[in-house]
Image 1 (cartoon, rainbow, N blue to C red):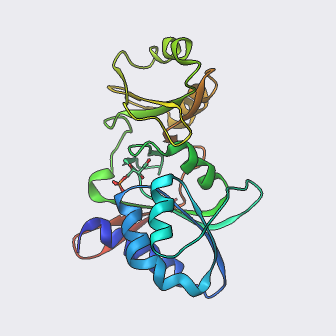
Image 2: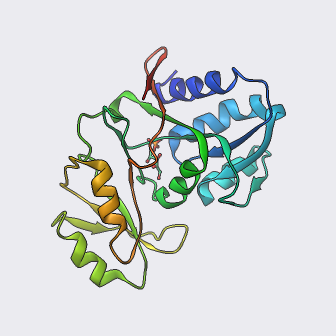
Length: 219
Ligand code: 5RP
């Protein structure tokens, strides 16, 4: 099986340790899709409700017979399972390759346990080889871009809008030395809806899929 499959298996084995009813959040991307397709049905009897981070994930969940609950900041998720584009040695992440980081972060914030599932290629020493996704209010574009040029001169707008109907820009060639500070700084720029750095709400556990197994990295 693939590294991504084994990472998803690791999340399943971790969640399966309990017997209580659970509230789950599901991220977006090919690794979380594997979790939904192969393992979520096995947890069906224990699942109280499921929250989704994107339209794409909602469609997949519906295809597997799961009704998705409306986002509610007052709800506590027992587990939030999601992938990442990069993971550094302190478990800070870059996310948003699939353009869903704003709604993913909302779920990560209300999760008791954020389990991040990745293949080996996502592990890096310093974040920033992967272009940093930023969702920007569609009406605030110009001023916001001016501020973001302080971080990178190589900023590319994606053709597709986000699920929230905003622009997504990718900041290339931007090494993120202090993820927590950079996340806070970028979030304070007018027009920024959210940035794909997950340092303030980083996972407690990262499961790295290997060829025939997986390993856990815990904070
Ligand atoms: C989507 C994400 C994904 O988690 C990230 O892009 C990883 O995707 P994949 O599991 O396909 O490698 O942040 O917005």
